Length: 150
Image 1 (cartoon, rainbow, N blue to C red):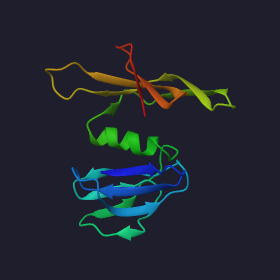
Image 2 (cartoon, rainbow, N blue to C red):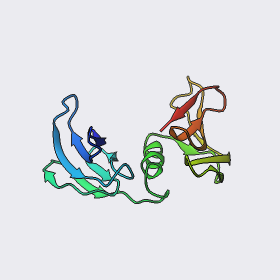
Image 3 (cartoon, one colour):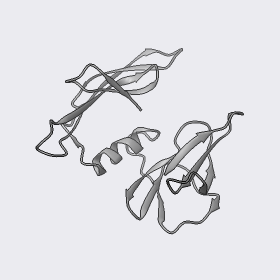
Image 4 (tube, rainbow, N blue to C red):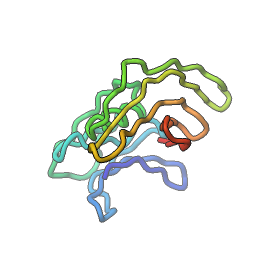
């Protein structure tokens, strides 16, 4: 598991541990809550989101993550979704409009979204970006009332 963590004093760091154990095997500092973490491109390659290990050694390859979606969370989320079988439903990522600068809020309209149908036995899943709202990046499943926060 790769993660970005924050301690009770506000210090942040990145770590890698082997589940089900939570003992950190690789660790590296982070500057605040931007970037950090990463995702597994495949079983032997961990892509790191703008951080470098400072301590530890592992039996797999680590490489920098390409920040093609502005860095931060979406450069981890979107490639991970693609790895897991999600596909863009169109080229339109929507229009983004800042609604509140004091409490950073951005509304997104018109995102074509992502879709995934793991099996013909199940309905297709969809998710559309509706903005950076109260709890961060927010996606809506159009056929459902609920929201998913990242």
